[in-house]
Length: 385
View 1 (cartoon, one colour):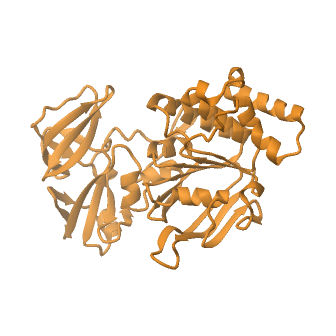
View 2 (tube, helix red, strand yellow):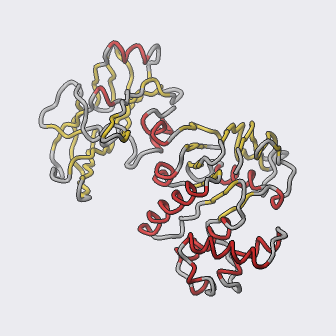
View 3 (cartoon, rainbow, N blue to C red):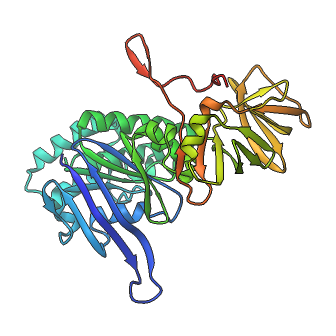
């Protein structure tokens, strides 16, 4: 395993005519054994970044370091990396054993017995030792994914690169494979970069996540840092499912006014807001609540629909022709067309600059310890005003 560092990485396509920026001035440093997830919407630059690390794209400027060595001009085969693709990229005429051993035969001086021992050890680790004689057409999607992962693991590379490897699997198998890949990475201790557009994968798998948009890094941090303390409105809206509710407002004295909102601010919040006049107030669905009576920190609206999910319900509320989502316990229900008040607790709001999108205020999140384990506080119990 090795460290991985991206220094001002920039990739511009068609640089001389109609230039398109794939990724711009990207700075990321990854310690040995860390698991980094690159996440963002389509076209944000995450796959360009991964392909640049692999050597499949040549950076326009900037450096890529694996360990202490700049690898910009090295061929992919010389970078000591292993890549797992979205479509598995298995040779259809080869058995699982042959697929897993092919790279070792082509790029190492290992003997046939050493290669066979590696393949069998990794196949046992992946739970596919009984499938080594099968060809890809005889394997399920999950089994093919394990073979593709096994082919990368037998290489014992310095860096793993995974390009949306779970996107072709059904939801249940995808959830299972998320856990399996994370456990494997922890056991192997190999520095890993994982690309996905699915923020749930990013939150559950990464030691750190890098959120990209339009080729630019928006925030780099732990999943909980990005969730609880987003650097800007884009990060706040992208991380979290359902997405954060946003209220556009203007500052009038010590109040935020607009879009069904008339919200008083404390002195501390006014200090955080500073001179900004256009403000966006954000509240996550699990931090809001449905209450009986309107108050100083509520907005009123009409229930459009309720989505029951068992332990929780999502209540979709129309507030001045804009839909808001509130998460409530599964035992609580509201009727379509019912007038309700949404409580927006002061201790749980986020505030963003309406001009730049930058975060002006994020709520304080204190850690709680339960039976010796550290957990973030239960965000489903809205704090008092």
